[in-house]
Amino acid sequence: MNRFHSIAAKLAVAGVLAFPALHAQAALIRIDLAGEVSSVTDASFSPLISSGQTVSATVFFNVAPPDAFNGLSDSVDAADSLVVGGGSVTGFKLGLASLSSTSVAYDFRGGSGPSASVGSDTIDIDGIFILMNGINGLTATLADYLALPGSAFSAILIGERTYGSGSVSGEVAALTIRSASYRLANAVPEPATLALMGLGLAGLAASRRRKH
Image 1 (cartoon, rainbow, N blue to C red):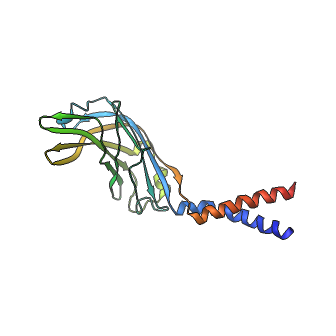
Image 2: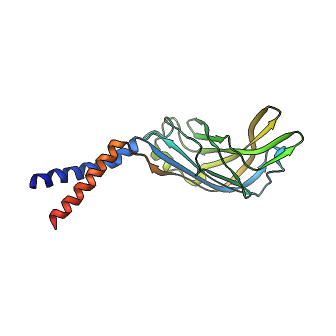
Image 3: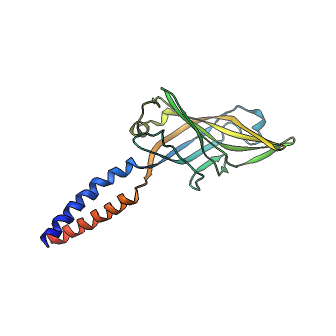
């Protein structure tokens, strides 16, 4: 019996130590932005967008720590949100990411939102381009991204114009960001890690029963 408690105690410690390791597998990142339209850069989108409109966005995507750029992955997520002047844009995802020694950018597009007819064309708000300044994307780790202040963020609304059988998307409005954050939303453990965590919790329970 004493041998069992000894093994259980060791598993408990192993489970606790294994928990941080899940961050090395995959991490779910959440970026939140809030602000307003500062200028409409494509006048043809003025039926949909005007200066002063409030804008809020929440986007989720995966990274592979300790790197927060290589290993990027994303899919259409019901939790993603982009609201422009009360109108919601849905169905967008991370389509392009770029970096330099001074910044990192994420381009979320492919969504569908408020739309209008302009002549024979249809326009709609397609997504959002997010730029993070003051970070060396060539060397930054996830910890560096998590430490970014709200003032490091800027953003641009992306619009899409559909004509005939084709379409084109691009910048349609600049935003003033009032608040922004880059944070760890969740971590995704591997099945083996989950099993070890379960054994660790069981070991902790056994250890406590022994003390009582």
